[in-house]
Length: 230
Image (cartoon, rainbow, N blue to C red; front, side, top):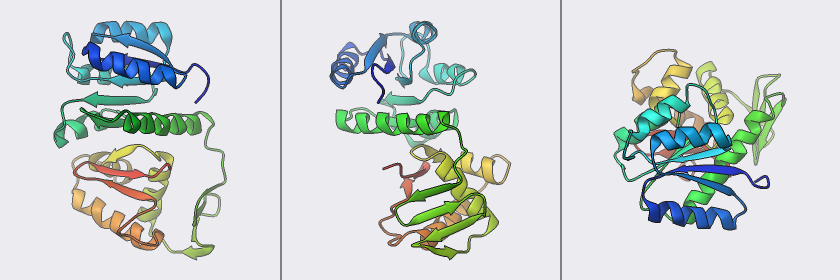
């Protein structure tokens, strides 16, 4: 974390916002609190935060509308922190561009870990994508030569598997919904999520040393997949 990174918390529950404020301030963050959606939008334009923690149940506007509006002009990481724990609501928020979804009640350690993941992903994005290779433990992806190696040995991936792997790596640490993956890989909406599961299972067999306890491709049950950033 850079010194005095600013986090905007849009949350109408004063107990929760105070708890988050105290915890993040101890970690060296600058915390700005908004109790309504409109106030959140105003403070975003005033403070230009590096991360937004967004509740969906706001008194004046639905947090989903705030998320949709923010995504029209900024790529700043947005972590939804909400009591709405239904899979459909998680998927909707992630499809609209949320980087992650934390369900209330939550442990502060979990929220901090999700914030760190979002920071690392943002830092990599800001640094550009000029890297020629991606290396993580036993996995190496050579972008220039279109080669994938496991423990130094080249493995064969189909074009769709390779494209899916690149998508996951480019968004590592971020949950990608089934619909998002279908849209990016196949180019259309509303495809069959079973196809995604088949390709992910195939990728795991080729990349993971133990596909039942994956190191790289993690499942967010009922939502999608995340490439590990740890």
